[in-house]
Image (cartoon, rainbow, N blue to C red; front, side, top):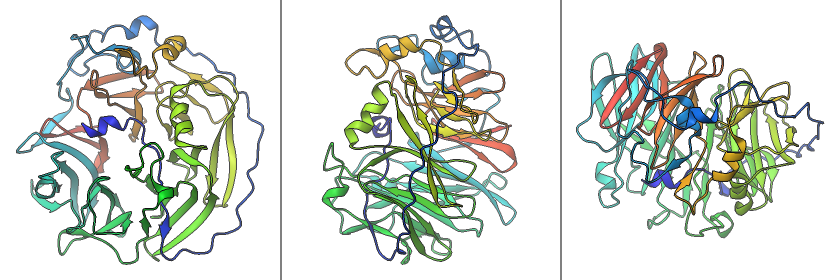
Length: 438
């Protein structure tokens, strides 16, 4: 699948076109001395626990340790495959085919529950006919199908955002190789419930493709944007080698907050505290290298939208093997994949059972055996972290409880897990929509 080629999604390489407010004077970066950054090793899984999937039961294929830490071999036929979500997950809806279905979001509106699911077909010849979004009402069973494509522009909605006023916005995607009639590319579109389709808002910001915005590794590939929606209904996004912007749909106003003219932004996140965290590299090659080697003396930046200040949140002084993407949970712990996390008090917690083995096998593309950390994409209201792994030999999803150190690898499906109204988790895979009541 094409998604498996994008194990690490780098951030936006775009030039914002259109009306933007005059950027404020950029704040100076404050270098704060870090707290104790000596890695600590709490009791965790042993290397032996990663060698076999474990006993397994009615709910788990195997242990979280095996899912997260074992070094797989492409020739190993004993690795579980094609296992649907186990109990207590249950089938809520069966789709008519086995195309790639992905849960985009879930919401409660006007007394009804809506589950938005995309259907994607990777055949370029049938993409316009087949790609759509299904709005499913689990109470009535009603399904409403709307096109994912936006008119005849060649752009389609890949992700959605719900705003408290009831509106639904889509993050647009486009083929790097398609012949577009557009000279600029709107990042967002808005759902029109009357016409039942997504449309470009005349006030939304657009980006124009220039030589400076093309992927340095492959000039024919356009990097996709990382867009975040905060609790106030404001969109935030980075423009590589440009800066940090926000867009307010209620006022149709785009504001530039930071000037970052020379760096490639990677690992950006919007944390529960409303702050934005990120790292940067001078080139895309350096950004890729950060995922493939140990890192020392690298800064993690924090931008506060409330105070418009940029500071160094921490500097990684010790040798820390970075892997996966950053994630900050509700407790304020800054995670790096399944390697471990940085506590709010500045103390590192490493949970990987064998760092030396990690450094030996990490992303060894020239070997049939290698290891890659899964990455966190969701934290549910009960504090569970949901990890994803997108590798051909051991795909799947697992949850991990930081309070107990226990977890469960429950499916070899790939795709999202989304928490909806009433604490119900939703997931689509194998031609079915699954649900799990927390």
